[in-house]
Length: 457
Image 1 (tube, rainbow, N blue to C red):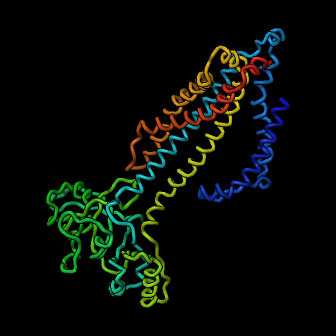
Image 2 (image 1 turned 45 degrees about the vertical axis):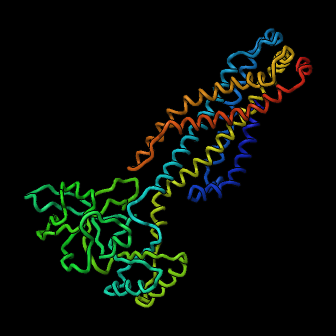
């Protein structure tokens, strides 16, 4: 028991040192400012002392009471070690590898989901779009500002909009005019000028988007596919809708293809576009240049010409949308780090246990080799038991990992499927790591001189 408490105390001291060493890196990885504050919290030191006592007691109680319960006569006959010790050791190995396999599976699935998010087509082009914020500062000069920007060959398109993908959208209630007293529908709502669809790369499937050639577009709307389905319209172009609280009918002039204006956590909701010119919060600009700094400098210079007293605030749309999944990215990085750590700890335990097993069976191995057993046969003998434990760990880990990740993926409206290959690959990876760990001692024992083995003990 004294040895157990001493080892635990040394471990606590080493742990504190390692925490201080790696805490800055882990804080950066997790995206949070973490600090220890051992002496700022009166519970910290007592908690560490309590940990030493509890862990030392649990770790030391079994070997101390187990060893003290041996009968001297059986010990002298070499019958001290029973199945209880083997069962505990096996259980600990199974537990360690079950945790490692769970973390393996979690890391694979989180990585696949993040890759799916990054590669999913959003229905618009988020790259090479700079979004100017607080564009209402331009007041009635927004269109003139856009025309100045378009004089630069590296700028392809520009638009004014009250809303932008990745930011919260407002909602409105409307109904189809052709259904008297018809059902009301709650939809997302956004306003933009003529060039929004072209600037954002949104596809128009039916009809058209707002156009300067049609002054009547001030009383027109464009719907997305989900809105058309919700309203139950066939051939929607030319039909009219009413906003609840207004008797002014709006004509449907076009239907755009569904696009992900919110994160992939949410299903694409019905969306209605209305026309709005100037004095909007956002002014998205699509540019062609690889020289981003040059384009940015040009836009900033034009802004200063129009509104020199107002600050130029902007962001890149692609980066902003990627931030919607920052929590998942941090989760993936943290789980990867913990997977490596868990496998390392499991291998340490397995390495020590393999050494212990090989030493206990030294004489047996010597006899087997003397009777003609091959090196491969001895390696297989020592590895077989550990292989069985890892396979049992897989049977425990798979359902736990499936349940946990299935719940995590429920937060995404668009997600990857959990395939059997994820579990099989994780299990094979754990098995290979275990075999490599055990293999060192197995080969060492198998290649030892059998004469020395027979003299053992």
